[in-house]
Length: 472
Image (cartoon, rainbow, N blue to C red):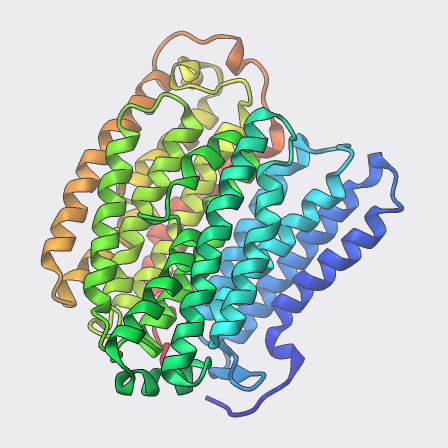
């Protein structure tokens, strides 16, 4: 990697998103209500330009920027593309729902700022910058959760904020302890110093640090906010919360495990494997008998996090860990957004039974729903199928066969609650809940389902591009 590099163009995708958010906030104050959609269009342009910049950066050698506080490598580049691509889909989901809303421009700005926080978390090599990314990803998200200002939204925002504030304080305390142990916050200096520090001190710091990062991931035991925040917020916000912040937090976990904690004396693989097993199992068990579709997808998200943590547990022990995580993150993001897009497209259908007759009334939308739900199970040829094969292989390669077997069992068990939603949608019947729909959301559902299948078929050339060391 290059040394002291302070070229702002190295963080061009982040700069584009930040500039778009600031400019959108300024022009939104002057635009009439009927023209505030222009702020959303500006955000979409910034996201598209950021994806192009990230793709170009991915072809260049790895480098560090701003005193090695930020790194641009395959992890950062893939996370940028996933976050910005996901943001683009979420912006489309919001086009119909929030058009001419009194606070439409502020909504788009909050989405961009939270996504920017996820990008910072994905590329950081410094604990202080990790905290900055955590706060930037969290504070706008608290506002988004309660954006409707109704009872469920207020409850969602309050629970989300209280748990986030508590675990954020623990994260700061953990970073303080790690600084005391290693006398540094930058990963290149902190990683070699921790093996010489007292093990109890390092362990206490790691527990506090993990409290905050696992909150952003939505993993057990920091998962309590997920079902209530997802159910109480609007469907586009729920889609955002269960996708974008997780991408940055998972990339941060991968980097921490490989560059900082691999040789620290803390049993990193054991800790993460226990969290992974608990998340996939408890998420599945809680999802079995959910009737509310958003709450079902919330618990599904928790279980998916369990699978996503498999390669994090074996980072440094398996060469497959990085590409498995990055590919699965992309596969999960597009498939999860596709499922939520169907929910957004049918705002009156809140429960599983409300989807009865969907295949007869809206066959393309029903096909998209089936593809995305079966995709979340891991059915070929969808992208999640390849992603699960990769993470299972990484777990086997890293010596965690029991965890891969448990993940396979949970995968089979998850088919039950996804079928509970699929069967009514392809059955006869249909009510008023399916009569009205959101056209932009339907378009997102079609696109996401297509990408999910296309990414699965294109896994061969994509996977090698995700390899490369995350070590500093």
